[in-house]
Length: 275
Image 1: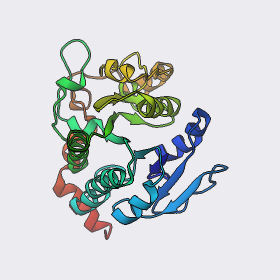
Image 2 (image 1 turned 180 degrees about the horizontal axis):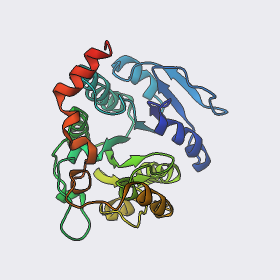
Image 3 (image 1 turned 90 degrees about the horizontal axis):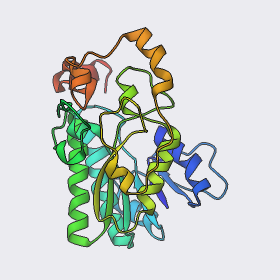
Image 4 (image 1 turned 90 degrees about the vertical axis):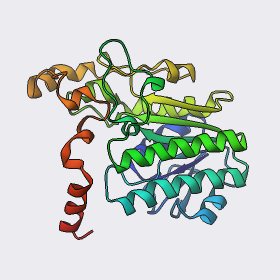
């Protein structure tokens, strides 16, 4: 099984956990993998390079696509690292005869979607309302996945990941946290579920304060074991109870919907940093 972006934070978690689920790994990134697992293959390549991706996908049982800039950036960075890589990954999988692709989408594909007045938010009710260029790239990722399912009969599972960190660090993340263990469980379920066709599911743990519905993910076989609630007392003591009228808690994308991630602000910071 091939993982792109394998040197990143989520890739590192999967490289640690998926072999214990029985998956043999072929890891690809633009940098060398540190401390590869026994038996793990490693390729250094840009996931936007179709020839390199096709070569890496050949013989793989599935592809998990994680490569991309981790968060908002300028349009050229986002377009290359997310949109061009996703197209290359899917096309490489098609050419190599790989049936199953798991795409790391994001809640930011629907970031401006409002929190429901009651009940849990289903994927079908969280339409594409991206909050950033990063969110636009994830919308495009989901659209490309849909195309390759409908035109070529592939199986593509898009994971709308919440907050994938070792532990929650904000009050919002009490709802959106995806633990390392549940990250492995979610991807393993997406890889194993029989004939999913095209599926889009939320990627969070079994959080007591969650307001995203995990029914679709559970239907794939995902059985989350972790909950952010043990962190709640300390986080609320530090930051206070969430205000439902605060956009950070009222919209799917949280902080990504605020003005400091407007394109002009991002461009200005990039110029100041010489990027």
